[in-house]
Length: 276
Image 1: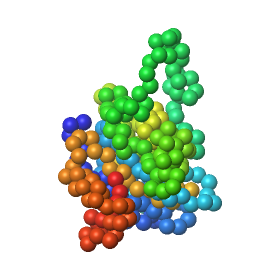
Image 2 (image 1 turned 45 degrees about the vertical axis):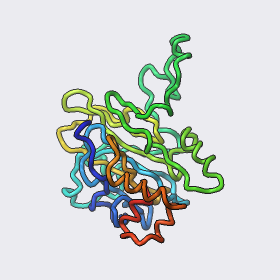
Image 3 (image 1 turned 180 degrees about the vertical axis):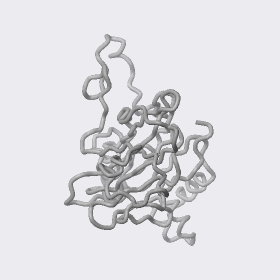
């Protein structure tokens, strides 16, 4: 993980025909219809590197929600971007994509019971303290992902504290606005990895197993149907970058993030300061 992960995440310039990227290439919006919303990460992911997005806008009237996963296809080599990630991209092979539903996408492993609880093994298990929201990192095997960005927050408002509690306890459906959904792959022996989907700080388990890692793996985000717009959330694994420290300094001296619009700053810098 030491070599990971100093890059600024962006969407690839190759994407579905109905997708519009903002100038920073961190926001993807489907501008019409319900399909042709497939997007890719700008570069391949490293092992243990999460590609995390927040659902910014929803669109009523459609059935179906965000889809996310991995592909070994370099977006630049695609003759055309598939209309759908499921089934079109997956049918091309070397792609592993799952639909995020209104219910959890939790994978039940052998030996677990439904709901993710382990079988009762006595008082010791009962008395073991729960550390779901007290650990600083989410650990999957030997990979640690900082938790501070994994859970969404409401925008400041009259009832924002109530919404924040709902996000933190993962009580809202994973397809709600401000939900944060990520994909990461974890090495599992020589030449293979498992893909995990993370929903609001909770590991959904290995959605796909024994993915070959002999080719670079790109993140896939399909802005599909009821999901209208998503934004990449930058996750920092080590010390905060100079960019982050500068942003926090600016944010400390303003009343509200939208007050940045009043400052005499370049538009891209304003944009960077508004979001995580």
